[in-house]
Length: 230
Ligand SMILES: [Zn+2]
Image 1 (spheres, protein in one colour):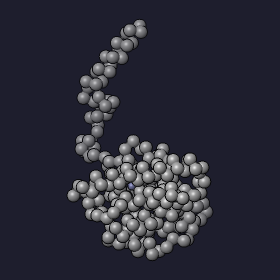
Image 2 (image 1 turned 90 degrees about the vertical axis):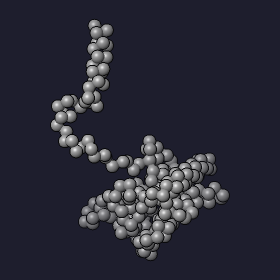
Image 3 (image 1 turned 135 degrees about the vertical axis):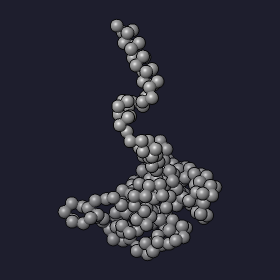
Image 4 (image 1 turned 120 degrees about the vertical axis):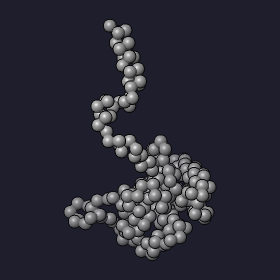
């Protein structure tokens, strides 16, 4: 009986693999599929490979630092939309960040989350925020046609947030050193990725011909190096 079950399972598997509808679809379901669906490639994921950034403490630090800063400074929707054009997928990441760079991605996700935030209960607003210290001059810099100006403005905006968050965490000496090391290592990874992209003349980053293209990484690295020296 036992042997029969194993044989039956093996036969079933073989027939499934050999069938043209082997992906788990029934033949009837495959036939019902409109032919256009197979021809359209889905939009590629903008998330860094393996989604490791989600578990990485350095990426989490950047994510929460940016989200916190956006709320506490009360950054305007206009400014946020200039950093990440809404609903624009890969192009939205590449507007201000290095595509699939873990630290950049953490910052990008925080901007997108804030962009899609809801109102506080009972406020009657479309989207609520907290503080009001955001400097509108930054909005003007973000409007610049020069990539350098707007990307640097984003980097300068988030740098103090990362530093503030790092100080708020009040880590012990050993943990702080470990986190700073991780930030520096992740920033170096981002820089490597950026340099590889930049070599491609067709890449959007080819025109990012200025030092430290990866500004979210650059901000994290600067904070880490400064704190490391203290
Ligand atoms: Zn980066």
